[in-house]
Length: 135
Image (cartoon, rainbow, N blue to C red; front, side, top):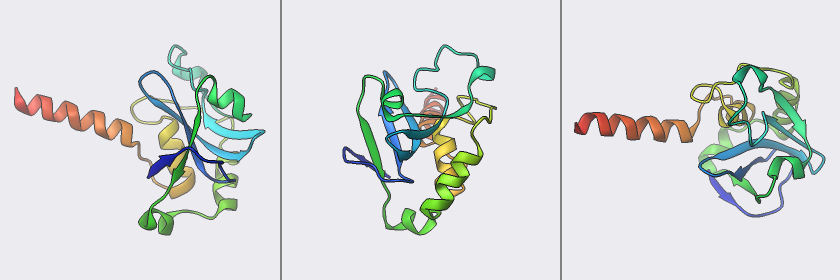
């Protein structure tokens, strides 16, 4: 999925840049972005991080919002806009956050594609495996 700076639409995956990672959410409106925790949860214990709804300004903090633009293959796998939003809303209040195995990127991919994936974590795992295989 490519991310661009443009106006999001209901059901879009949005992200905002943090120091060394991106924080993801599902855009419903400027008044509602559903996300797994807030963008700056790095220092919070995992048991205090939940799926929640906030406005766009709380979501983006001091950064810009980028919108995910799915390629043709991804579009075929996507749920409908209504399904994406209802799936995300149904999970508000859910916990179980885990940086490696259940983070905000996993959350949005489950809401949109029904897949539990995080490209960020997959890339990190791949780099670790490469490093271990070189030594």
